[in-house]
Length: 264
Image 1: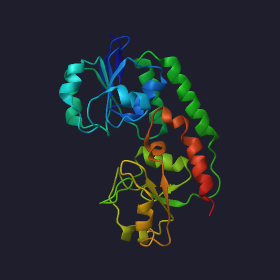
Image 2 (image 1 turned 135 degrees about the horizontal axis):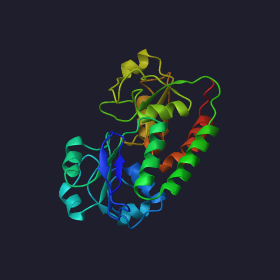
Image 3 (image 1 turned 30 degrees about the vertical axis):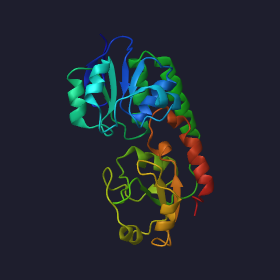
Image 4 (image 1 turned 180 degrees about the vertical axis):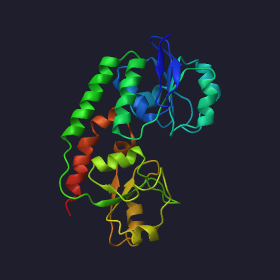
């Protein structure tokens, strides 16, 4: 069987054409769909909402961090696609004892493009993967910066409020969207307080739609506390999904930039 090296530098043996694939990550599930797979994907998580038809019809194997290990074993997959950050190490190690588990580790656009190429090769869809990669690269190349980058904080959670550090994929997307991440000197997902946001003179506060579903009422809750900060809701999928959804991310960033004067 062919041997593939994942993004943690682990070597796994995978059958030439996997026919029983389980995806443990929403953005990689959507990628498998856009690579042209269908019946080969036999299991997804409850958070794999794209494509909608798969969300309604595919076998669900729990959440990204609460996998139903027994159900996964019963499905007898010949390939499991996971992610270092989104899945729990102990659960992945249990599965890796019995099945080939390929793990991605995506912290920037380059990592995402490598992941797309690698998954395409592994599932015998290299040509389709290259087309997706080329299209993403083209759209990001067309995404030109102009003016200064306003200082921004991107919130992913409430109670406690949590933001993103400079070593995250979201932070990399913030840069492409024309913002300066005020917490780029932090790692992963630090907690942040309202007093801290006041003290660092946060210009823009971006409230993500996921993993915490911020909505308009949260703007109304925060605005009186941060009267000098502009607060907007943003679609978290375009900042945090690192599969084929990246094709449309630059257009979304452009629309966002048209709403927000970045050269202030």
